Amino acid sequence: MNAQQELADAVVEGSAGGGLVKAKVNGQGDLVDLTISPAVIEDGDAEDTAQTIADLVLAAVRDANQAAADLQAEKMGPLASGIGALGGPGAGPGSPGTPGPGAPGPGSIPPIPGVGDFPSQPHGGEPRGDDL
Image: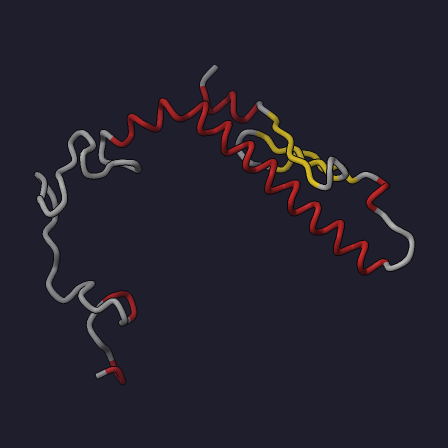
């Protein structure tokens, strides 16, 4: 079984409020189950209770998504590290096949004068229209 299939099949759990709300996501980060304890529901102010439940659900889903991200890093980490050597994400100065700072590498595109020189302008380009 490959790492992507393992992630699709894996389910991790996150919780909030001391376990009052539990969220389960698969290894790809898709929410697959949500459990809210009846103890969260308080008599009285329905609006306050609804906000509390919403906050706990958000926290539980974030916790579960972090667990899924950790699982992804664990399963895909060895595979993703090889991408950096090909110039993909993770490639940077000092990475194999990547030139150091200021050193154009083979096949690199030199900077284009006037493009990106004005960070305060839209898209980093030259002033346009009423900006002149």
